[in-house]
Length: 143
Image (spheres, helix red, strand yellow):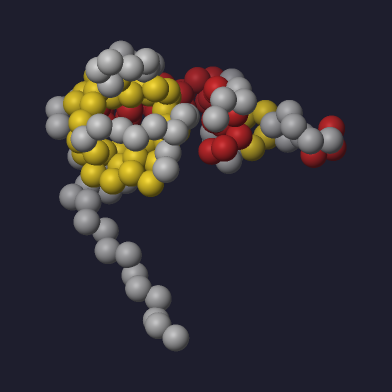
């Protein structure tokens, strides 16, 4: 039996979880909606809401901030795409969106990122912090 290998972190900057809506802009095709699952100063992990093969580079627009950046694909497995930012300002825009979201949640009297879960039996309905529930809340039943 082989021992488990530890994954080596190769990023220059640490990752931060985000769950921010964005759009992948590819020349000659309709915009593809996605979620920025996590990000760092140098790049991000995107979850595309439809299965496509991405080109080597594309524009990414953070919807809430209207910020666009050129991204280079570093890896893709199914609908999960790792990108490197080739232009600046994206990480700062995502950070501002997260800060504003946290402030809105605080103003509503909730502490933490929670969304109502309406599926299941009434006794199972509750608040959730799961990313999949947040995606459903933000985008409905799109896959």
